[in-house]
Image (cartoon, rainbow over all chains, first blue to last red; front, side):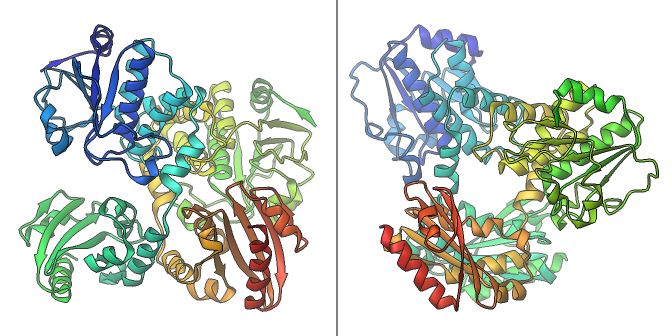
Length: 318
Length: 318
């Protein structure tokens, strides 16, 4: 793999045509923002460019990203295949696996990036891949319209949790400033992508709160998401991020535990700690593992016995 | 009132000493961030400066703002009184009302600023007062230490809802970039001020979700916060922002209604709309008022009859 600079990548793209751009499966705002911005910029520069993805984006993205053509491409003369925000070619998904060995250029920001293309533009310090795309479009002298600014802002906002995550750098904010100056409708994007919550999600949240329990004098909080609950509320796996982050946000809680049912008598446990307690030690007792602040394991049996064994192991560390 | 420029304000401060800085009552991150940053910068420049406030900050602020001296000052020779983030001198609170006519300089960013000091530095385009303080400290050539960067970042984050509110400008992000480069511990500040939720607040949230109702085919969502509920959960008025914003975040909801009990048979209603429906028209029917997207009124009677009259008026507009 040859690592390109921003300037070299700009030349690489300016010298080619008939682009096919690939997003990662289960697309988020950053891969979509990167893909749509790069595709539209290339088109504005007079080139043929199409964008495809293994899955259609979730409902909340539809207001920003038109999804008409994402499932297949119509250009018989594809010459250049570019992946955006794809850390590993396995993350393209089955429908795009046919391109795994045909990717010419990977543009990515993941620390876990595993090289799969002959050329790559990888900046592991970028909080979002859209930061890289923004700098690339400037280098290509592409016009960054309001529409492109919206795409790029949405990507940055997604991967930084509205500028809250610890991956944010001064450069992230400086690019956000530029994008807002270019017309990015940040208020509406924030509302649509972050604020809006469905009736189904609220119902799930209510049920989970009813079941929340505290242990070890409030130092442990535990919630359970059963298959029955997901079925009844019609909430999908991809909509669970908010609720699964809840236990460790509670004041005084040192270990947050989420129990997710996987099968009749199979439960996936994820533990998060504030860093004071090494939760990987607890999960190792059940053949699981992870890091000091985040670990997981799988337990089998009925729910009551799973909770009992888990809490016994947790109580031992206090 | 004489409006000063940033440069003139810098000179005004550099030429004086023995400062008393006043925050507004029920202090938030922006008035505290402004006050602590200005106080410590003046001290670093060799001046006497103290900071006072009518109320001690809420629990979540304590990790960032040491509150030892906020209730009174110990300088017998106060020469210069400066208010920060105070839109109206009535907002100083009763304990500070003695200073109402002694304020020499008001530094504020509220669009609703009502002049009360002979000199003022008011920038109504600043999303947070801390943006103005940051520019002022640069102009005064004060050293912006990591501690000052933390204070200023906390203020900006508070008044912009983590850069989500529509008051954000490119300048807001550029200042945030500078503050992070100066060492602001944004990850921890975001966690402490925004993420942490108390067991009491969660309990209230659960109770309110149990009571949430939808009307007009899901276009209206309504929650009720009774005095009994606040009493039982021990949640204070100042901790209600999150929950009262909920109804209008629900997908498909055009009017979010929050009913807050004020007395035995007195209920304060606040309505928020997505802008499609003018809620001030509805509130006017009950001698209330407001704007297209946000309005309020007060209804008297038992809760059931209040809800009935309210919903009757709301249904009329659909």
